[in-house]
Length: 293
Image (cartoon, rainbow, N blue to C red):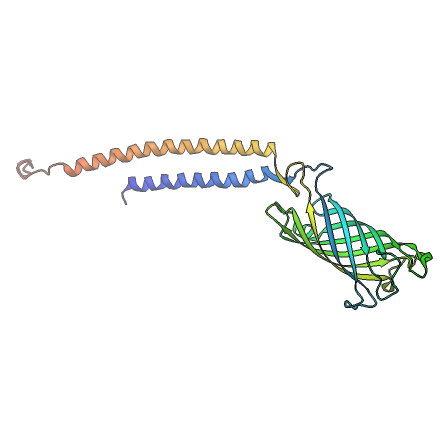
């Protein structure tokens, strides 16, 4: 390889190394300058309303056939963060199997104050939007009202209740505004018929299996869920700009050097071509070496 070609090769390699360094520096320095965080939520944001229904059976019975009791509920809640939220739910139970049927259409009513914990976001972090499938844990405390039977209407009583549930949720639609969920749960009557001490007793509890749907109300920014926004660190941006300017200056200097070397290469090529085209000297033109002695 001729010397000028080797020199040209070295210049090109330097050029590519500078450009590669510029790209690496841009990625390494600019990345911490651009971060995402949750957009600020107003009090009216991240609310939802839902309905669900299913069946309940005594825990000690466990027979889901003729002994299951239909029930339905209305739920209103708000997500405080992508992980934690609160909700209020009212459940109405329309039968009392296998015990004696009570004197009203609604046999038992339970109002619960619930905490909601999105386990998917807790362990996996919140993405740009909710996952298609999520698992949500629901612990709750509530107040229950048991109505008297036809034969003994004086047996109406209040009680303290506790609910523990898991929601297996499917977020539907492009904006994930609708949520379909399957909810297995156990509901305890902590103080029996209202006169006992508070305790978790399987003999005073029901197993439930519900299917429901939630609708996430529109937020003030038009979305139906938490939104991530870009947060810029001005100090990191200034550092990045300074480094990029230095790299641009270095690149311009390399380009100038490359232009000078390119001109030199062109001149050398012209001289080489002239040398190739020059007429060789003839014998008559060559001086007689013997006469010169």
